Image (cartoon, rainbow, N blue to C red; front, side, top):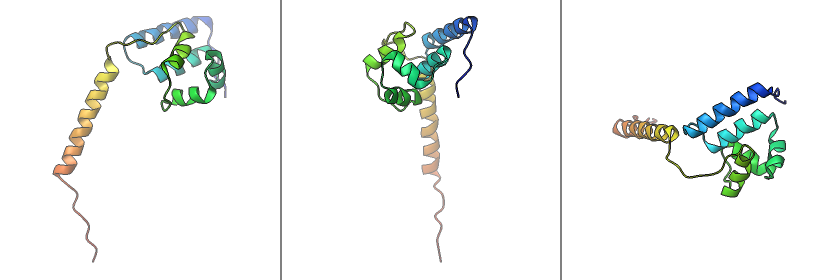
Length: 121
């Protein structure tokens, strides 16, 4: 099902929010691509053709499971005037560090207090 096309004012607001989120480091590249596609009101295949990227490559990338090249990222981001660059990891990195620390704590609790083994008679 196709999403409703945004009017020009909505498009401008969504673009500004997208840029702010990218600059603040709140988005992964695949999330940004999905938002760009939705701003344009396109399906995945249409967006992929517009970016000159294989449809399957783009679909996997948008799901977060694809392994795209820097050239592909440039093609996708170029539709909105974005480019690929190195930069300081923002809040996403910090959240990942906290999540990994919590996971390690849970694993430690499990190994410190193993579940009793069931015995069968």
